[in-house]
Length: 337
Image (cartoon, rainbow, N blue to C red; front, side, top):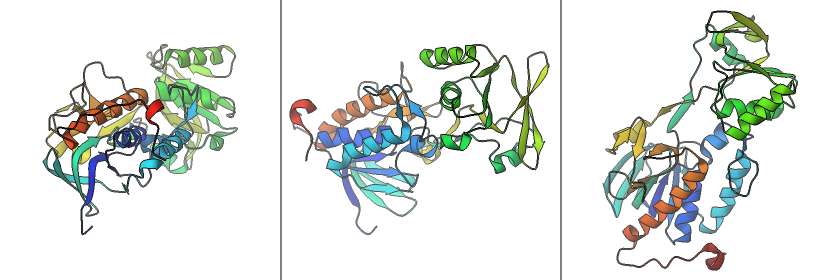
């Protein structure tokens, strides 16, 4: 790019929180540019689980991840922020009011401020240490993400894990799968209480087999085609669960990548911020969403949305020094046509 792209705010990360940050900045008449390493907007919602229902978005009892991203894209249409997708930010130089950002595609962005909304950074699944698992991954017998529920119709599915993803997908797939078994090493699941209750009710109705307390022990099949998943309890007693597909949900391995070299204060692979402004240890650089940490932080999209609004308001005086912000509610202000 021969001439730098100019913006008041460079938003690094175009997941749901980054997209909403573009909206909040737009409402304050701050220009933005979206930068993301993925080839499409949406972050994990689009790349990992577009058909996963999300239950804690206000005014939506349930909304699929892909639909949420589509709605957020429509919301920022009036502001038309440029998008630099398939780019990794390799360097940030300068100070508040005059940052220069470069990418691995030789883009140059001149921005007065920066919002980092990078989610989990570079992410990948935590793989269970099972012998021969690569052969089953190659055929799709072991999968770590669910992109299309229909692909699991009439399949015998074993889900391993005890968090939100394991519980949510067990409930979401139970009506189309031939069978669902969920393997967890303890009776208590680390999921939202309402979803944990739904899981227990489904188990009582015989719709889901709760295999507890067990953990994965071995995979059995031939030529990458899965036949049974062997599980073992704490005493070494084993069971064989008939299965066509294993879905291990043990979380994502988080890697900040180049972000770790930008000189920001970090805590356990997260960026520390001031809770009231979301500003990092570097003046003019803010972090929101899962990548940010502070006391009392909740890793919810809902909280990331609130952080986007707070960061935008904290940015306004940096971009417009000496100018008072006469904030109006969107109900009276409206959105640009």
